[in-house]
Image (cartoon, rainbow, N blue to C red):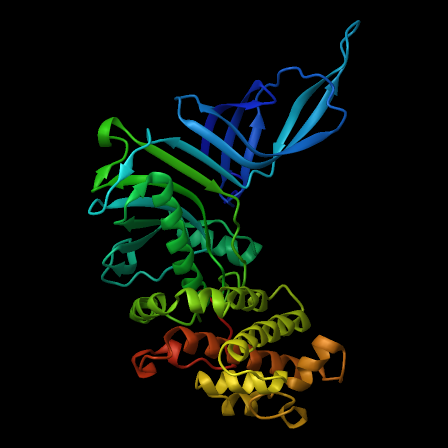
Length: 420
């Protein structure tokens, strides 16, 4: 598996400082956007080694519009015998997004289903025995999300485990029924998919992300043949979060995953995602799952995630001044069981309370206070990580009867997440 292999390539010509510059755009298996300069015209002397542009525009070889956003342009200098020196475009770097639009301003109306296909890094969904390849992640009246593993999925999963680096693992189709042009459809689909991937990322212990979106079909008719042929492709520089690197049991399999996603997606609204900052909490959680980091850093990430959500609860619902009071209020509000965690942890007898059982080690990693042994620190980390998992779980699906889940109902500190 070569993460630098190109999975997408496009020839185009963009206009930079009034002159045409032929380029080759490519996207790698690992999600890197590469813009190679095929040849550069001659420029006068800029007086600098490069410059930044919010966007550069042009056309593909087939005549579709192309826009490269947030690019850094590196300049070279040459001198010819008997002539003045000149600058040329040496490299085009750090494009945050590239959009190729061949939709001829097509607008879709309500009642017309539009499907956008995404290439995703780091998503490994569980395929039930009743399924062949694809797995339905979300099925709502106005939204359907279906994932299909790419070829050689087992080899790719092993690559992620061993190299601690994300590559493409799935193609995800998002079908919408909303009004708007194709750019709006893609932006909306990407936003919805981002939510689904965050929720999948919780049970995986890894933060998957999309790197390419492409208009697939309109009302089940291929975009390439619809109204003479429509095309829209968008590349993203997002990379995802390596988290646990698919290396250790996950929190939900099979029917558990379907039930969890159905409930959690409805609960993952603007209040939860943005006001309570659960998306940010998930980022801390994935950092804590990264086994390449020292345990002190991982515990610090756990503490940051718990305290962020505890402060948001305090600010929004019941103002608390002390960190301990905020954490205990959060635990009570979400009805999180902690007795077993307090028994498992290494420094409960030195900590503030049974609910804040890791405070002794928390003060060590945050302030440098105290001196837990390595064994105590590891036990506190495992117990605190489990507390964070239970907090996130209860926030996302806490209104449900947990007995309907198997693995998701029984999150214990003796385990770490894996993708076996």
